[in-house]
Image 1: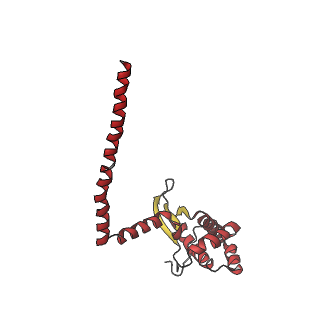
Image 2: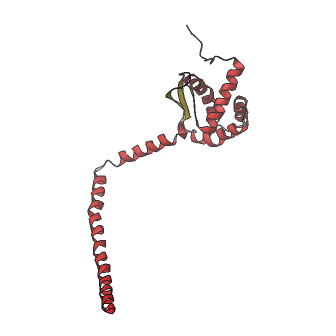
Length: 181
């Protein structure tokens, strides 16, 4: 039984495991999403979320604590400058783990771990669904039918303009054969 064993050791010694999680965290912060095994993704989630929580308050002390875990100035700067303002109002749950299938070589279960507020596709679909729900009103239907009734009028107006141009071209064509005779 594995009672009171909260840490997944990932088959590594503690120094190797800390370096692995640090490198994965830096990659996640810099690229906003990475693909790794499910076990590493779950371990990374519990490693990086407290660091993101620390980045909400930009103090020298918090920067030094985060740097002691990440060991990368660029990642600390990215975390405090771009990620922290986007997640300022979120009370946790900064990452999402999505299962993506199995690796070809050893059939290890793979996962995509990403920062929730940086997924453009999900954010775009959320705004599209919000727009659809706001348009479901009776006044919206009337507004949509009114421009459809006006559309044929605009199409009919250019039609007489074209024959006038053709009529102007026909007398000039009629004069040319007379000159040729």
